[in-house]
Amino acid sequence: MRENKRDDIFKCALKLFSEKGYDAVSPNEIVEKVGITKPTLYYFFGSKEGLFEEILKTSFTKLDTLLNQECKYTANPANYDQDIYPALVNVVATYFAFAKENSDFYLMVLSMWFLPPSSKSALLSEKYQTNQFYIVQKMFTEISAVHHNLKGKESIYTWRFLTLINAQIGFWHRGFGAIDIQSAQSIVTTFMHGILS
Image 1 (tube, helix red, strand yellow):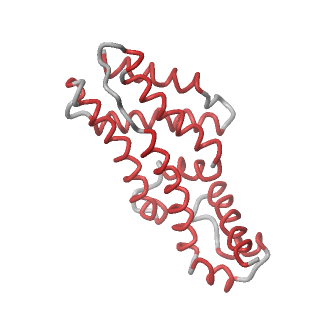
Image 2: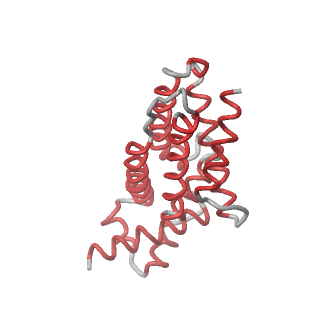
């Protein structure tokens, strides 16, 4: 029963943070929605900030685990369809699947991309966002070891690639697009046209 209450607080706060943003949600609103007292919230998470950090840690750990498994590049430069292309499609598909399964969390993530860097939620999420970036960048570093025209551009290409992925997920959240394998392939085709041309 105790764990169920903790889970209820976690889910309710995640929903509120995704809809309104971290700063706009008060501890009072969370406890009222869950039907608990403030001491119960503080017992499980210490503070609103502690609750937010637990949401970030739990959810980003899931995403990072998936990315560490899927951000793999197997060189085959003689065959376009079996070289960079499948590796990038796999990464996009991983993001799409995660965003579908964790839509409230991912909506919150999207909002944090455009927050002032000094805002509380941006500061709390920075280490998780940075770690995610480095996982994807590592794959681009592996690619640039084979495709030397990408050398020295791994960081900017990682940002551009993640921006395309997140834009598509953002459109999907608003009902303006899909996050399926065809969309993943389209994003990668567009992206690769830019980096290989």
